[in-house]
Length: 277
Image 1 (cartoon, rainbow, N blue to C red):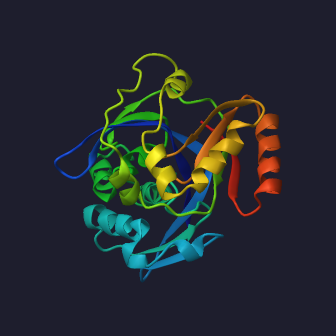
Image 2: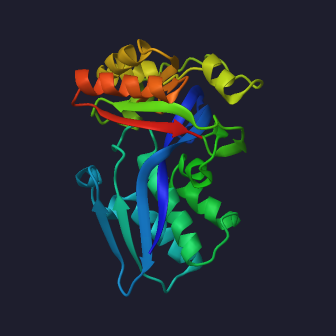
């Protein structure tokens, strides 16, 4: 059985520039990835199966609608029509949380199946499958720092953050991406900076979905207020369409202190102390 980590995806900045005629939005975003996330395992089998484990297994939903199952189906159609796979998803990331859990899982499925069937990861058809599965799946397939434009799937590789300490916090509130985008006010507040380090560009950026997400889930404001008061903080912001927020820190000690404080004062929240590559 082959395994792949499905790391949490973070949007260091997310600028919404316009609504598109196809129903999507024109975006500019900085994708980076944590060292932690879900884990996806695959093996050849006589009959296909999909099993979920982990603390968020119960929130995954019906297999027929799951991106992992859809990724497996699309891969088999393209590369291995006679194959069957046993797939296990060990689910540690909250669902509907703005950190690409489903997209990361689908991308990990494609990577694992590509390894299993000796399909090079740079095969163009693999990226086409990823884009068909969802706007964030191509970035998650690459799994490295990128700038995303268009729907978020026109990607350019950039330097990462070099294992910067980070804390992810979710108030255990699921947020509908569609509901958040529906509340976006339609104002173009300008592009991402083109110059500077990835961190400098993030600091100069913003998340245009944060205000509408806070209207949908006011607990996001509380998360950000707590993170913003932490010592050693470099940046605190919501990721994607929420409700997960992240904080970047100068060092691991400051991150761990913040994690301990939040665990003590908000024990019902999900937290993940990690690093960002």
